[in-house]
Image (tube, rainbow, N blue to C red; front, side):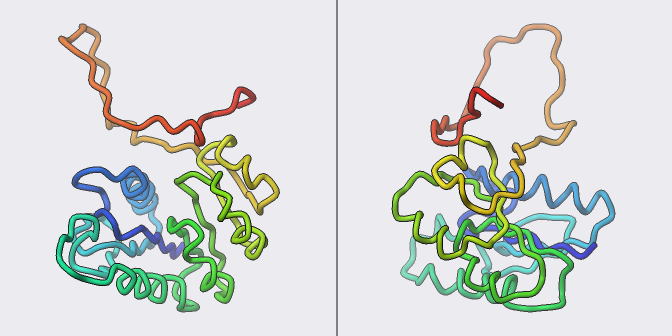
Length: 190
């Protein structure tokens, strides 16, 4: 299957620093390649992948401190990944609602995974306008503010099986680096 993975340009895939969404996009992309799919990753040029990399800009945008227009690379990303027809069997966008206008006009099946919060009131009109767009959440609680939207599935973030190993003997410490987001929590019914 020919699959396009469309990543935000804020961090590389995988991220060198912070970048939860980009890390998940990397895990998913690499597993799809391992399973034998023909995957194209649309991301920043400093990304590392076994897939075909379509570099939209040379480096991830977040740490660029120079004067530049951040919307320009995002416009190119959306046109290159969502604006063409016939190149892919399916397009998987991780751009939240930003890709909806082009995805709506592209006959290629497109699904969007939402990695962020959806409880902001200004999002309501966007989801109503694009009510037909197929969407995936990362938890059932995440989708509650727009529960009426076109949700196709909840797919919890997975990790590669070999990422962490069992250490049966206790060590000197436990470290956790992350962010707990109440709006994305698992609901008691899950």
